[in-house]
Amino acid sequence: MNIVVLVKQTFDTEERIVLTDGVVSEDGVKFVINPYDEYAVEQGILMRDAAGGGKVTVLSVGPARVAEALRAALAMGADEAVLIDDPRIGTDEHAVSLALAAALGGADGAGAPTLGGAPVDVLLGGNFSVDNGAGQVAVRLAALLGVPHVASVTALEASGGAARAERDAEGDVEVVEVPLPALFTAQQGLNEPRYPSLPGIMKAKKKPFATLTLDDLGLSPDDVAPKTARVGLALPPARAAGRLLAGDPAAQAAELARLLRDEAKVL
Image 1 (cartoon, rainbow, N blue to C red):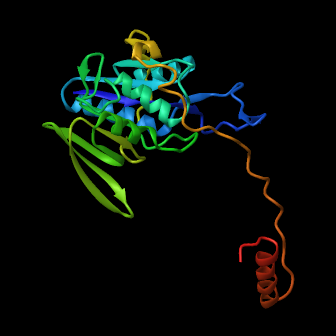
Image 2: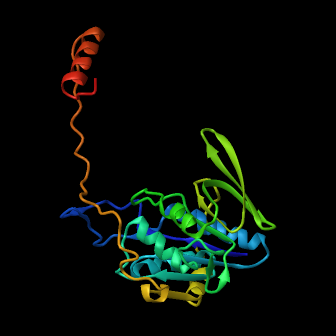
Image 3: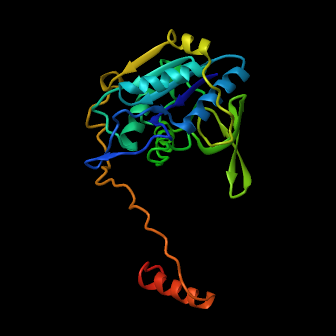
């Protein structure tokens, strides 16, 4: 089974966000694999092993530092890595999905997705990234490749050219069956991602790692120009100090209603 896992590098969730001139500062920041993408990497490894063989390739778009996240995925057990590193690629979901689609055989929806000349059976990714939470890249990519897409899966099995996925549906479970190739995004609960072992870390240094640019993908800068732009970024205002209301319960309720109406403007 040939599996491709989409990986994004994000801030460590324990990092403190610092803005400098309206831009998130990366000075001294620790980067990690997007936590939801870790579930996807683990699922790819499990599906490869359950199928009795195959290959798991991790694929990402980003600067050179993203190689660290891809190496971590290789240390977990993925087989190969591909990094699309070109500063001419826009950073919005439109540009990223087009670059990924080109790496997977084109963005015209014709034919099954391929990577390195080999047909891809399953594509996996995280439900969304913890940095911007857009959750658009996977569904855009599925549309560009012309393959089925199932989001937020909590269980996934594949055999005989088809897959069965489960996803949360308002407290119930929705079961979706789709033909392969297809793209699935992982939700928390799908599995328990493994920690890279020391032997895995050592082996990762010798596993195939390819770097592509727009020229390799046959795209021009105009093709992957961003369609959206961030016009502002600011931290939320500091929380105001609490206020104690005096009087009996009736007086407190009346004062609370007045404050909500006249000051907070929520009534």
